[in-house]
Image (cartoon, rainbow, N blue to C red; front, side, top):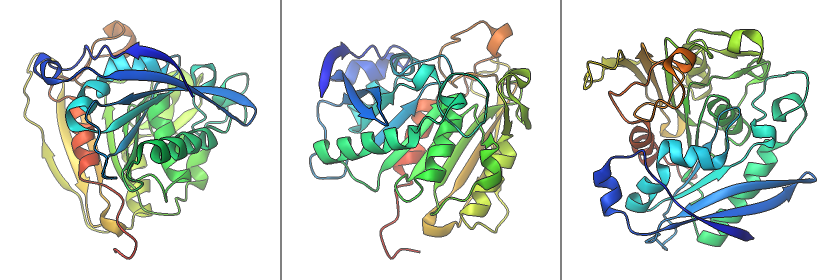
Amino acid sequence: MARALVRTPGTVLALVLLAGAAAAQTTVHTVTVGGLERQYRVHVPPRLPHDGTAALILVFHGRGGDGAGMERLTGFSALADRAGFVVAYPDGVGHTWNDGRALPGPGAQRRPTDDVAFISTVIDSLTAELGLDPRRIFATGLSNGGSFAHYLAANLARRIAAVASVAGGLGVPFAHVFAPAAPVSVFIMQGTEDPLVPYRGGRVAGGRLGSELGAEATARRWEDADGMRAEPATGTLPDTDPNDGCLVTWQRWSGGRKRTEVWLYKLEGGGHTWPGGPQYLPRRLVGRVCRDFNATFAIWDFFFGHGKAAEGEK
């Protein structure tokens, strides 16, 4: 199924991480789902555990992007080489994902593209071929990719253990019928100065791209779906870069069914960007990059502690 070989760039993580990573490969795969040929990149670490415990992380690009760009932006492949998990970077139809927003015109969001079936096929293939742990399937994404991570988890709640979204909430109208069949742990990161996806929700890109629930409303939907009842713990991350114009406050809900949790990082002053990553577009277009933490490391830490509970666990 692999049809090409690409060297992993991994340029956005700390040099100390890259220095310790062994040589590894990213391969490009294709599969036909729903009559469409779909493509996804797969990065397998050089020392993948073969005892059935290795995790899979699905990483979704934003609108207009692709899997190759998301690999460069996040640096997940370099981290995978150190931590021993597999990363998949799928490509959306027309550089978009069907995330539950009903929009007129072409593109995955604007026609009934079954992206859930596509990703389910990718999960089936990789878990079988590489002997991955079916209780450690995770998804993350930026913008449209972050919204799709929510959509995917809600539709594959029995398979997805945890998701992390950056600058993307639950899409509307899907939010009105949101009813996951099983609890899922969720990590949400959203900037208060995001010029494209409002922190408090509403019209995306001034209304051109539909609407989403805000970060806090999305967290509350998952909190309710996971069966959490207690008030969240709260706090502030250390302001490790006083010059980035960003301060991170957090809320953490615990006690969900099957040991699930919901975390919310409010990036005060942050924009439509990947925390700790590059300023991929001018600040006037996407806002500031928060540099008080690295989203890639934080997401892996969250996923590492939030695998799917075993059958019978409460």
